[in-house]
Amino acid sequence: MTAVDDHYDRLLAEHYTWMLGGDIDRVANTQADLFRRLGLAARPSDRASAVDLGCGSGAQTLALAHLGYESIAAVDTSAALLDELTENAKRLGYESVVQPTHRDLRGVLPDLATAGSLAAVVCMGDTLPHLPGRADVVGLIADVAEALQTGGSFVVTYRDQTVELPASNRFIPVRGTADRILTCFLDYVDEDTVLVHDLLHTWDGCGWNLMNGSYPKLRLSYQWLTEKCRAAGLDVHHDDNSPCGMQILHAVKP
Image 1 (tube, rainbow, N blue to C red):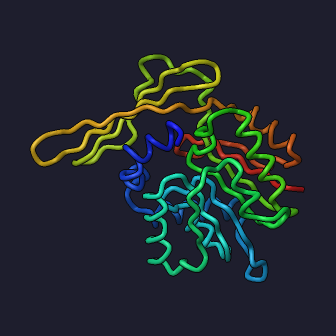
Image 2: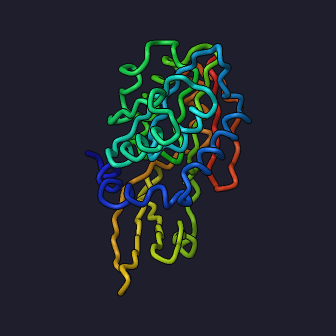
């Protein structure tokens, strides 16, 4: 178990959907709109297959199901989040479409798909920087390029943390409601790594309780990630910012 896996199991998994706004269906619909804009909607005749790497509670997986993908492997290291995804898939009638997969992202694609078989691989919500090192990112991109069919898409959203924020801006409010407040603090370790400290306050009816923890994230620039996608043989069609501050990269296998 990595530091990131432990952090999610101990602190974030229980609150993950709340962090997204609390309405998984709304988030899934928003992600489906993004995928449509990028040209990922499946045609009924395609019998398209996809993999969602770092699926969480299922927003992207459900979005792909909405768009007509007939087989979606949803990969995450959190059993709790996969259980939540399973319930969401059953509720929406996608239990035969979604295959929850409790695995590390590294090395999983060759076990899930034959070469040239996938119409889409998505890795959303700042999941890619959770990998332990840049070599792991390069290896994952190579696996994606191998697994995608001609014309298949690789979609990533991530935060470019390469520019160091001034000290006064390193405290970032994630979300606050009457019963929960989540704040994170960024600690720049070196040119490759930022340490994320999460501070979660929960209200128990009598007072506030604090849970906290830290985990490392890779500092990946869009230039570097674009170069690695191109080196793996993928064409980068789209790279810009979303309204929530995430960088969006869409690469296609030519």
